[in-house]
Length: 427
Image (cartoon, rainbow, N blue to C red; front, side, top):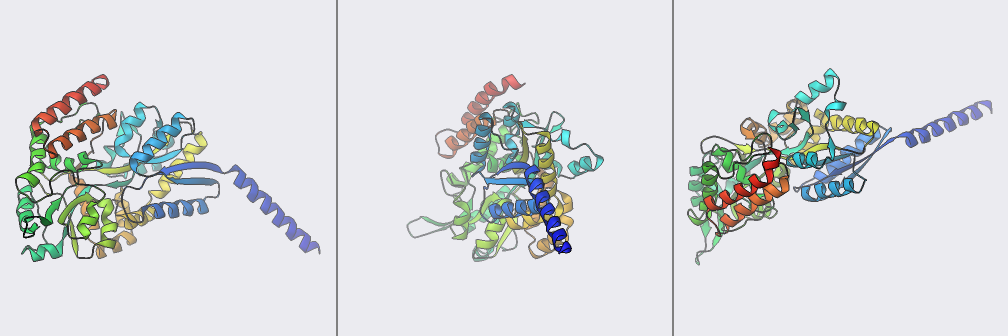
């Protein structure tokens, strides 16, 4: 009887402690977007649930907030309404906008130990270009990417091309594209050689052409664009020529979201899209496919892309510390490997690629290494103060040229003048 009473008392004490611990837990709200197909949303939820199970002193409400554009809009609206999330994954290019709006705090105040600083240095430099400014770290790379070229090996073989070799230069992409484009008796294309999307965020894939031609669209401070650089003009003319001159790509605006499906259905033999689509393509392409770095002109080159973690103002020190610890956990090798394998995003730290899981994954699926290796040639994605206005101007210029309303030089000169007007106050 005495023993039974004692055990009941212990159990009651444990239950009381558990209830107290739960009541004392730090609450975090975490917004995340999903911009590609595949298992991204499910994997985020699984990883978050795993962390909470291991850390009962933290409650994390992971909120799927829609596209990147939806997520930043919701985060800004919630912040202005006095109810910001403590943590959010938002495009790396929105860093200057979030700073300008005074909505985020740097991570540096919470990364004080030598171990913390070593952790920060472990991210690929190309990804940190869109994560740091003014000597401070505002973003931690997470679902990061670069655009890559995917090709249908069966279509290559049918066209008399080596199915194991992708085009390495702009000239080869045209040459291959001509062999891959198929037309019916009426002259309508049944299969295009290549598809480079120009909707959604057209500037991003276009940067793959501009960088390869030796141009950078913006300076490192985010306050001066180079839209009218002759190298940028030449790159835009090449993009238009793929349709109008070489006839290897569909004319007009090409939809971002419909591109993987067009690839799966044989409407295009090559496509440019995010490495974040890698798992989606692996799961759904009904043919053997390859993945390659973007074709070169004067150099190899690609923009980085994707989302960073940001800490929002309005959180307590306790919440910020808990958020940083979660970020450190989810970017650690084991979790990062799981995320990369599930989605195709580039693991942003070299140590992840050394795990047994990633070694086994890449041994079985070598295309996963392409985007990582392309980081050697990657440059920061277009990002400025008042980023949405400036990129909107540039996207409109691209669209005007792609649809034949303006010539490349005129449209880009006008875009540069408008961007200068906006960014003058930040210089």
